Image (cartoon, rainbow, N blue to C red):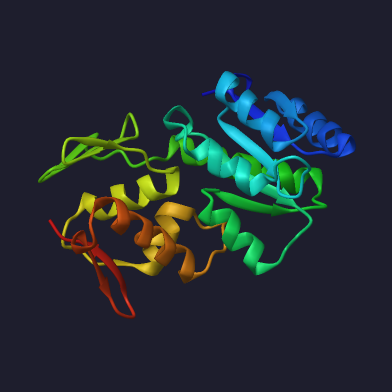
Length: 227
């Protein structure tokens, strides 16, 4: 996929931020779409289906966390990457962002070159998705990795991108214990710094949707999927 084919949705209530970021990314050849708040972001995301959304956290009408949660409920946008752009660097805010379904977290102000580097690193993930079997079948669980669809006990389950990737990873080798570092590397990427709690939260959500018995915690090591 060439840069000219990639759509990036910028969402911020500060016009100067939209202009500066939009200008620098446009120079790289990306198609830039903008929105001033979370409500407009959801509408434009549904219409444009961008590959990447750069989303401010603190905005009027609807903040970035709520907007992200809404976007992640749309199956058509499961393959869309979302990174938060905010001046807030507190740990709790970052955890809230990842729990809402974000893929990355950028603290502003950020230099244009660093921003472009981060964007390119994010977009590489679209090309680096696992090339294993497109469909995984384990009992009544069916995972279509190409279409980002999950069926469990004959019912379709909508999973946010990170939950889907975590489930896909664990089910790729049932019974194998995936260490926390490996999970962070393959699901969140090397350039993202997240805590172990983020993994725990995503496992808890998967247990609620697919069953507690399917996931086993190996204390001090990681997790495995039991078929």
